[in-house]
Amino acid sequence: NSSRTVRIVEVGPRDGLQNVKEIIPTATKIELIRKLCATGLQNIEVTSMVSPRAVPQLADGKAVLEDTQVQQLLQIHPQTRAPVLIPNIKGLDIAMQYGVKEVSVFVSASEGFSQANIKCSVQQGLDNSRKVAERALSHGISVRGYVSCIFACPFDGPTPHQAVLHCVKELLDMGCYEISLGDTIGVGAPTQVRSLVSFLTEAGIPVGKLAGHFHDTYGQAMANVWAAYHCGVRVFDSSVAGLGGCPYAPGAKGNLATEDLVYSLHTAGIDTGVNLSQLVDVGAWISQQLSAPNSSRAGNALRAA
Ligand code: HMG
Ligand code: MG
Image: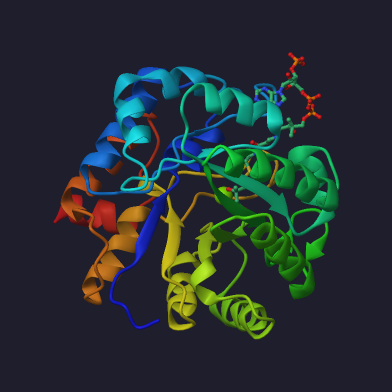
């Protein structure tokens, strides 16, 4: 793939906020989505519909979805994709009541994280995802898939490539239009990215079906994007201000900061459709709202410049 554009999937409102301890007002979440949209980001994961006991921070997902501005965003699909993360039919049924046009299903390539995160085995997670995907697709709802722990699991250690391939194949087979490869605990480095993406494509997975979702625990996320880019991957997930982390992945830090991603891509002459200076302001704004340090290096540098 030689095209000079990259599609960014902003996961801040979902992955970015799900691990924040103090409950954030729903209005702030909606304002974040609105501001992100105004920067030109056209793919924004807006919330999840999961057990409120599992992720208390996103227990207001319904209130987010029923907001008028979020509703407008949902309705202009596929110009703008606004997926909701869904683990089971219960979550899908709720999301459908709010007119959601895209959902993301998620599985782990490792057993330990699967049990911790969704209380079932990898295969049960795939079976649940298949039920969600089949029902969603029969209602014209697009489905994106995630595979977690692509390099390592906080409970099981290193993940074999074969386990990732199995999940990717099943998710594509159930109709996911794209599979996001998640380095949930952010331990992977560029050589591992090259090795995994080559393994998957040599096994017949089209590179155009793959996206990269790199957490930045070890500071490798941006380098990992470039490694994947050079293998042909053109879709990357990131989170404004580098927010993020999974409550069931001990030690996991935030996602790659969207500001850092946009800065790096634009410097290389690759189009993202995003207004960087506006995005930097959104990163500063949400960090202030959360009283948290802004984890975007580019964001902080551009503010100081
Ligand atoms: P369980 O306890 O076995 O489920 O959890 P359950 O069916 O017994 O339900 C428990 C309660 O949750 C019940 O309520 C259900 O009604 C309710 P109660 O009767 O006790 O009042 N419930 C729901 N409510 C709303 N929406 C739903 C839903 N489902 C059940 N969809 C379950 C199993 C899968 C539900 C749970 O473990 C869960 O929700 N897990 C999700 C955890 C999560 O969201 N993790 C973070 C996202 S994954 C991630 O961050 C990784 C990613 O970014 C990629 C990467 O970085 O690798 C995607
Ligand atoms: Mg994640």
